[in-house]
Image (tube, rainbow, N blue to C red; front, top):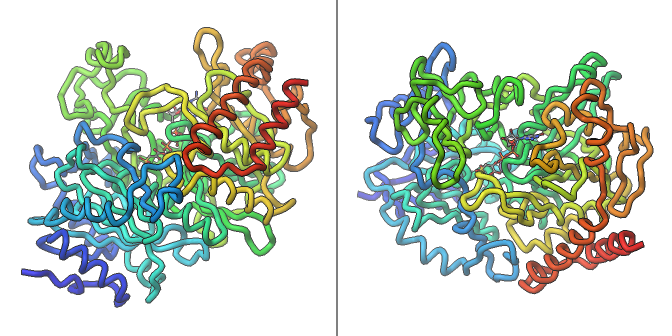
Amino acid sequence: MAIDAKQGALTTNQKVLDWVQECVDLCKPDKVVWIDGSKEQLDQLIEEVTSLPDGDPNKMWHLNEEKLPGCLYHRTAVNDVARVEDRTFICTRTKEDAGPTNNWMDPKEMYAKLTPMYDGAMKGQTMYVIPYSMGPVTSPISKVGVELTDSIYVVLNMNIMTRMGKAAFDKLGDSNDFVRGLHSKADVDPEKRYIVQFPEDNTIWSINSAYGGNVILSKKCFALRIASFQGKNEGWMAEHMLILGVQKPNGDTKYITAAFPSACGKTNLAMLIPPEGYLKNGYKVFTVGDDIAWLKPGKDGRLYAINPENGFFGVAPGTNEKSNYNALAATKKNAIFTNVALDNSDNTVWWEKLTKEPPVDATEWTGKKVNGVEYTSEIDEKTGKKKTLAHPNSRFTAPATNCPCLSPKFDDPEGVPISAMIFGGRRASTTPLVYQSFDWTHGTYMGSAVSSETTAAATGAVGVLRHDPMAMKPFIGYNVGDYWAHWLEMGEKLGDKAPKIFNVNWFKQDDNGNFMWPGFGDNMRVLDWIIKRCEGEVDAEETAIGYLPKKGDINLEGIEDEVTPEIMDKLLDVDTDLWKKEIAEMRRYYDEDIAAKGGRVPQALRDVLDKIEARLNK
Ligand code: GTP
Ligand code: SPV
Ligand code: MN
């Protein structure tokens, strides 16, 4: 019997109702539930999903109610643990509009290919209709999305990651300006897994996955891929950037955004605790966002940022009291843990480096009970490294409001004014600890030149150096050349009110492969220099590649033993030969990977390349 999607609808918006009905007719769920965001409804869903039998792939578990109140645990299929970039598509009408960094298929063809997969995919199941706002509901920068899904796990994650519920429909009113997301886990078949954006239709189709980045459609699919396309057309920017505020002893707060590729330190930097000396002097760091920034020029002509999200979907391994106290604190209640390990002695969670010793009575992330100490001393044949109890891309989903250092401006509809923007990546060599661009155009070049060693956040080999422009390679929803042009246009619009642009590298290694910079909280020392540069309080060394700190201008008080002058020299070294290679590689990248494949590289960026090369050859 056909289901009437209007039953229980939380909106009279005809566009929404028609689209939901269309998807209901296609997916043929037994039931449709409109998510209002109320506690009663969520409690009921939690009850349902935790009552599933242990072998059910959708099962979630309660954790220790005293130590982790309101927290839930979930394991995904072993072949469904990260974003799948080779199965992610941007379906614009022309291939050229998707550009060389995206997989592309004609939208008509893609709809035709996927429609049979969605046909009846929700038989015997419930379709949840999730209205949500990206950004504070009243913000002029925020936008509404609706996700349809057959997964309670998705509903519960969306509840943390977005402002979910009826208020989003109220914000939308009768408007057609909402992003339509259709997700079905279907058979979680990796061969039929597709994560597809149709930017011209404001539509996302995701099928055959149940892993976060592929199914929390608000996140990478909407807030970056679709939103970057919208931003290009509407004069704003959607970036893979954290947003933080540094409050100085005089009470003045400077806001900074930073773009690092996946699993390269955004959450950590966003929540950093300054070193003791800074704390004593009255510095404080506040988190506005840890992954995504939407940026728009404000009335005063400056660039303002909001965090469109409402929670953190953070990398668990490596997170501990010392490395990221605030993130860990945020996971202590009403959080969801995915693919971490369990400490069965007290039904809590564990992951690598949470504590020194792994639990003896452990469940590793695939569900196998093991002796954690013995297990983690075994060598994994595939990687040649020690086995881990948690998946390297295991994640926590934590409400932003749990974060002890959440910015008082987190909910501010106007957002925060940005003084500096930072790019960075994992680079064992070449790239110094920090340097500043000569101007916005050079900064845009720097962003286009971001490259980084790959991590476990996406499937594929780990540790391979790849280009990841603006840390957005997997997330630019249109032609990368046009995206760079949009950056340049934004710079022109902002003029001398544009944020200053910097590049950092926390991951430079010595000859033995050890990181030379202590990182984490000590990154405050670099932020300090960056802020001083923005305020014109400190001079810099003009080099071929940009402005570098002068000797002694990075405050090393308290870490002089660890970061000796010799190490600092290496961290700030600009090796001419390596940089000539870097420039040659960028030329090759622009020519072969971008221009030859339909990317329109702006001439202004090529001019920057020429200028750097000329300076290096001097
Ligand atoms: P996504 O959520 O995938 O976008 O990742 P992210 O950019 O937020 O990365 P996150 O902060 O979760 O850090 C990922 C990994 O980098 C963790 O294992 C951290 O321990 C490590 N890391 C973060 N900051 C630093 C740093 O300053 N130095 C070093 N050496 N490692 C760091
Ligand atoms: C990333 O990979 O950059 C993430 C995690 O933040 S995911 O949601 O999977 O994209
Ligand atoms: Mn990310």
